[in-house]
Length: 215
Image 1 (cartoon, rainbow, N blue to C red):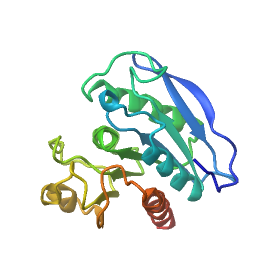
Image 2: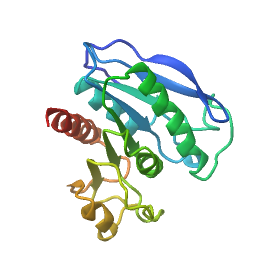
Image 3: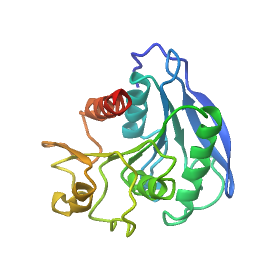
């Protein structure tokens, strides 16, 4: 993937997770970080990893907004230890990574960002850590596969991005996001993996962070 940002190269990390090590990539902006963002990948059983192009472009958006970006592989993916846990243990994995960011940046806001399965895990984590989370971003929250969390205590602010050609997203089921005053960005004729339009993911991430950090 071409990089047009003058940022340091990604650092390969093995973080301490709840069932073993978590493989991760950590990137810093060119200057001092304004915030940090945890990026969560799509479904492990269907080939999702932190190297997914949507996730990587989300990380580029974070860097463009002068934020540090941490991408992790959930348990059982790549070199991450453990086994797939139906999205339950994965929330614990994400929390361990979030805590690592808190240790690295104790005085900065920390955001959660997720794509597809990762957006579902990220929302569960945002609810769990609502008092500590600066905001939550979702790309292609798969409404056709998952029910919304029962808890009404969502992280705030929150933002959602999806395309009208996404077979995993039904916009008629986005009511809970609207009820929580989430910003919802809909892109015409774009599928689940944003083929040929990954720039939209990057721009959405950068614009959302810049807006939140400006406020």
